Amino acid sequence: MGGSGSKSRGFWSFSGSGSGDDLAKDGSEQTLARARSFPGATPFVFTRRSSMFFDEDGDLAHEFYEETIVTKNGRKKAKLKRIQKNLTPQGIIKLDHPCIHVDFPVILCET
Image (tube, rainbow, N blue to C red; front, side):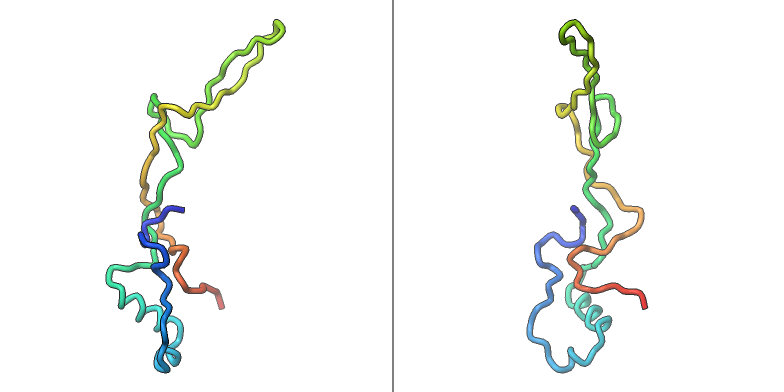
């Protein structure tokens, strides 16, 4: 999953020695305090890398196939051959709704 949350590995790992004041706070206050300590950091992902490709005609799809006719023992048989050349990746696309980054260290639950 290629998201645009953090570019470096382990960005959301907030390890370190915690003081007694940190332990007294509830989880949401700790998370907000951590987010404030990293300006510009957000747990949300707004874009992702697309898995689709454009072909020579400008069509967009995950895979492209070409129908070929194979003659074997006097019989004609149609086969599909996968096209892997001359394809251009779609690139980075914007998500309709932001998602939470996979490395964000908060457990979400419904009570």
